[in-house]
Amino acid sequence: MKLEASDLDTNRMELEPRLLLCVNCMRGGGQCAETDRLAALCHTIEENPDVHITLVGAFDEVGARTGLFDTQTPAQRRKDLDVLQRLGLCFGDTRTARDLFCRISRRITTLEGICRYPANPCGKWPECALSGGEFYEKGNRPLRDAQEPGEMAARKARSCRALEEADRVVIRAHHLLCIVCFAGREDNGRPIPEDNLFEAWMKFRENPGIPVTLVEGPGACCVCPPCHSYHPARGVCVAACHLRDRKKDLDTFVALGLSPGDTLPARELYRRIMERIPEARAVCGYETDTSCEWTSCGGTDRYAQGLRHFKNFLE
Image (cartoon, rainbow, N blue to C red):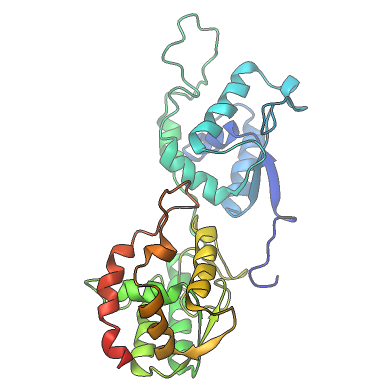
């Protein structure tokens, strides 16, 4: 597959939102109704966390009935709507399984009010037999990372060796700002396992005139390969911040007056950053965080401190 290419057309499934909770119960050891179907679904998701799931149900995104309406009970329809409301999604929305289960682990920590009804005196609305929560709580966790620690370490070693030997650096545009934030850390004197920000910073410090080619996206970037959210076969980032980081790349290009593929010496790039991006929130933060995908970067408070490390670099 071409690096960074979408696999939406070939790697997608449709699913009722409530079944995501059933999968968590099965992951925690529970035996749900429709065991065979759910076991197959659970296996698919565990083996392929990046499968795209389109959420479908008895209604469309405006509440009109779909063909599934007559196949569901009122309780099932209610559960689907409860899950969507908690997750801030609608019927027709598509997310990867990884993103959905990460969101669920944060926003649906209990089955109370969804599969279990504290105020249901007549017993007319049947509760799920597993609604006590033991299995759900045990299974309610994010799916596995795109890379295991051993893979990360091997990719770290290879990418660092390539960066050390390179006479030109290829890097995502917004990672220039990440390097500034890294420089602003208290522990900025040592590398970290999940990226190559330290190594890129050292490369720039040792050779301020080195040509730097700015790219859009992680596929060719020197920083991304060791990350637990980097999918090596596809060259994409599968973390929930993937769209946010795409926008950060493009916003950095706008601020610097450059375009994808442009090459400038490292010293010139950071001169422009000092002049044109005095604070990180201009690129990396939002006045309002509207969703999991559009959340401000948490490291921007270190940016001002990091810029101080670049003053000598520019002289």
